Image (cartoon, rainbow, N blue to C red; front, side):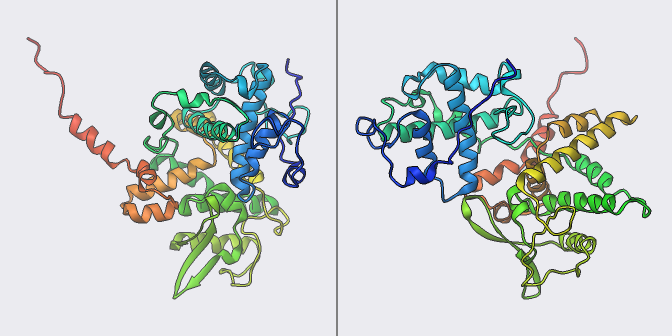
Length: 385
């Protein structure tokens, strides 16, 4: 069954849809102009065409849902409450894996697969939140008669990720080991490409740790996004939801940027007219895409895990976390360590660019430590009766 070919859910026909082409069945289908479920979902996705990053993320979740429905010979209108639970279990463990799971491939490659592996509980919750929104939109538009997500008891609690503390991060000693290995001296006699790659990895990880950017923000960063204002350095960034922000740049980040610019044979500090990518390919000029950055981080995690696994050190917990980690773990790591360093919640929220303090509060682990210390006072009597 591993030779199955999937038809990805594309927004490639958006121009035709946006031009107002009406399908034969649209009069009977209410306000959604579509001939079939795929076109109906595409219409929903087009509502997010002004936010490309959101569009890509929502397409991924909607695509998995549509492909699963097709594999089950279901339509959106035939969806029942029990199907949502079945799909949630499928997201946790997409089976048969030979059909659904595979390495990263171009979307129209014959061996492209919708999954890299099963999803974590948080990722599954997020997927269901997105699909709940999809089904609600389709119901309001008259494409489906019912939205079975509305039958889920206590949806607000079940779909709420913000109340759960962040666990996908590297603890301080784990990060220290990662950073130390990235900073090992390389032979000056080594190939220039190897030196460049080592400097780039060091800058990537340092950038991710010091400023907590999302991977798309790293790939889109330009040199003149770092600017001097009244004697202090700032980084301007357009983040999630196309929201503009500026963040203070710590001294360690400016030092790291200066070292990276030296590797690029540039002056230590960027100038206001320097509209060039921060992170670059091997030619030192072209920028790196989100996917290229993602693969570099994952490859580095894997290499560090293999190295630790082969050593005599007892670091199996770090090995396991490295094998499970994604680039986004470094954002979680940065914000968690900032909180542990005593940065106030209001400034931590600004650094994270969260709309709600409750979201930022997930990175506060001090109460957990204090709770453990308090609870340790309670134990079994040492003297047997």
